[in-house]
Image (cartoon, rainbow, N blue to C red; front, side, top):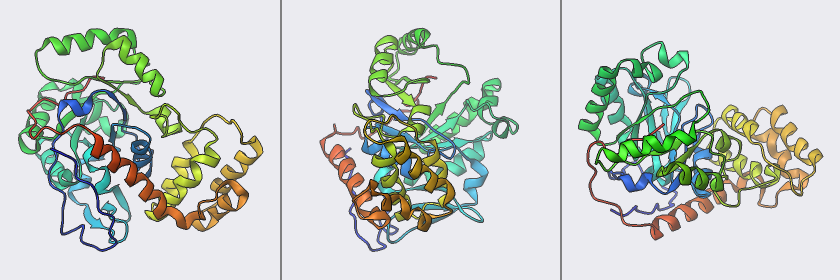
Length: 353
């Protein structure tokens, strides 16, 4: 099954032409670097920059089942951005261009609610991931996240229900402790010894493209997932990630966020996480950009980023061009990629920690 390209029209026909259900196969989880799920930092602009710079798949931030059941799905007729809105703001946003690569992470402790929530969003994503590893109290207090590991019967019931209803289920298990990379080979060998076609994705302490190759060589895992390093620099999926982020990444990121009408607080938070090395940019120039972001309250205040001579791409209003550049890269990758399998068997999307 091939991934269809996105037509960048300005009309509102996207709502009438809902994308068909693509199905991920084990090969989609292999031989690549993957953006891990991150609360707040896993926003749509960050996911798109990760895809542009080589991420094979991208995870969205965890969304709780009950919240999705009451969300209103709204499509922006200009940008095509799909928002799942709560009472006061968008809880989750996506765009059709990322759909073949987007995994939606679901927080749930109920098979029935998990299925209902998955059905709400499944036409806009490539896979549904059940969070089984978040140790934070906001997740575990209601039996979600890592609490599911102490209730394997419930965990299996949720996965079985999701697999039977959507064929998009996978599971996410995370730990606070540093990844024991040298021991993961045993996990990979055990999973492969089961005789099932299951891709194993290593998650923990991978810092970039070359490090991913090193970890895969040690563990024989199919792919590596990156969180912290990608939060600091979403271009690290590339063999040549950006440096001097105040000049190379931040202006582009802010322009795209404005074009998408991304909430300024979300943009400010994500930009505040960006960290990288400086090769040509002075510390003073970098500080000037970051001070502008910190002191500003919205996009009109951030025009100063462009006025300091860091950028020559037309200022904040060039966000549409930023998006088209991203679309061109993603569409070219889809056109050159291997054909997709027309079907997916239950259990094909298992992942390792």
